[in-house]
Length: 439
Ligand SMILES: Cc1ncc(COP(=O)(O)O)c(C=O)c1O
Image (cartoon, rainbow, N blue to C red; front, side, top):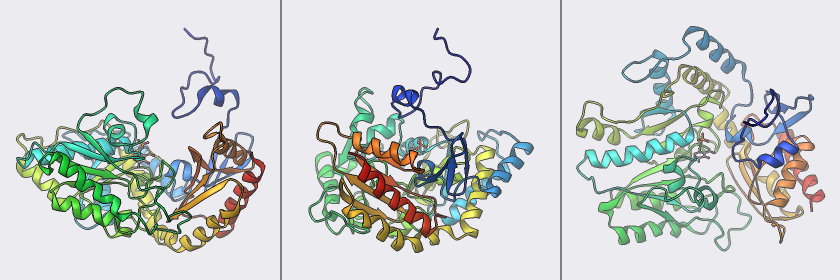
């Protein structure tokens, strides 16, 4: 047995973290409020990443904190298998008010990864319930991130997230990613070139036949692999091909939901309605872990009409519709609505865009991308050590009072939607200074 004492750093096996490096030089967060974290020593850190793309209304909003406190005192937990509690139904109805019209059936999960696996399973069960049980192939995209469940890493397109974990799901294909198309460098908003990359789906249909294909899943804007904004017209083209072949289209909006791109969902901003939307993160402003899948009326009704057992979908989680999540989520939706935060993000977009693109001449920068209140700033990798430069930038920025996120050699920014213009300036100026000091 390891000799682990209370309060040392050994016991916590940290996720997606170089544990040995971190534990040699830890960075701790102790408090949070609004746009800031504070370290245990009381140093303020401006949060340019909404935690992990999730605290869209800013930290420790009193209404959300109070709602959780109240619910915990009233009923800590209730199962959702064969039982219900009022907040679950109320929360689902409230979500359905902001999902695109027709995507009104809400299945609760505990995280984004669970939402993805749920949507993939619903897609398979849906086709089977309609007597089309051969439609089983799932199609993701290179550089897609859909969480870490076996379904999510199978349709996902990040080599390191897949290569250590065996044979994954069988029957999965990947569309090409949309990054690096000639003429798209330093695009402001949607890149102009590359909509035709969606046509690769026709190639997959030609190879396997539509009678074998269940669903396509994409992030409308890919976040985790470095902010890959879809070319103009790309998502519309994917939708049309899916319609032509009776293939379900799933948008993974775990990042893009809840105002991140200046609308409730990217589906609304792009004017493209998928058959299912995966959500999590901003669903509760991240105050309680929770996720959900919004499914179309057509998908839901097919399951109700065609399922061969009283339980129409053999799927669910202990924490589906956890009372604390429902309380936090309803309070978060109220904050979003009362403060008009989705519209605020859209209004802030031009300022944000101009500010981040002003880094075009900053040291090491080879590309900048933006959409909504997201930005990706790509750095030239060190020739001998890919990712090291971005990691150094991350550590230096933290020391200078700014929390950024890095993935590969890309800085990914996604501040809370309450960010002020002066704070946008602070983000950009700190990054400029950090990059000039990092080799
Ligand atoms: C698009 C997308 N899908 C799924 C997930 C997984 O969510 P979780 O970490 O809550 O399982 C993430 C997390 O970043 C994500 O960005």
